[in-house]
Image (cartoon, rainbow, N blue to C red; front, top):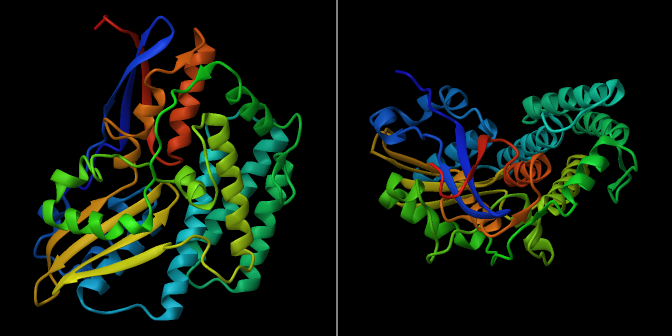
Length: 361
């Protein structure tokens, strides 16, 4: 059985006299989980999940385990629940750091070494987070903070050091080469969980391929999490990058010894009836959902998932609404600004971006 599927999104931006006239998104392919795993014992899937979900694999594992427990009428112990939250937060930090620094910036030798040190530390933290002693976790977070300092992120207020590669990148994004459209914003919250998982289990791929809530396609992820803490306005790539930097600081502080959950509902589970359960996990990309139905012997009869990507990169979703009607500078600067905005919506998913003149095939 092959578990491979296309994990890149193709985006075409149609231009008319310096304005984005339209945006077309060809989504990634998604695995048909029920068809693949119907009749399999639920717990036998644990070894398959990391190969099936290469993005945010810890979050997927936690979502699946929590959904299965809900279907069985069980509840994780406080110790287990805490370990899962820590694992999800560590993975979120790793993915946000990778999205900030890998593939986007031109780094000198010192900065490149700092990025390597930071990624090595965060990977160790994520891999051992279910059993890592608190003191060791603090040591690893201290290494990450030191690397961030070397890269120009200074102090608890996360002011970018002038002249650093990251400050220069944010300044380029903050220029007037792209003026995003003033689109109405809506955001996914924990209050939406029950409606989403109920529809997900009932309608399967028909819902997960093109989700909606009351006709709206809410945004999820870093910007949505920020909106739950403070008012936000229509935002370009620079504001979104700053929000990501602020979240990195918050997650580091929490892993350094925080007692309360870093966000409401990092992991939430829902029993939907006998043998039916679902879970929501707040991962780097946003809110991830799993829903399962089991028979009397705990074998899979239905297994569906809804990733944050399907909201943010929906054909009528937040990214499209931010880009349509935007004006951009001609040539490479404008295209780079669009690329930065697209990348700011999702730190994990790969995408290809092409520009065409409206009216030309």
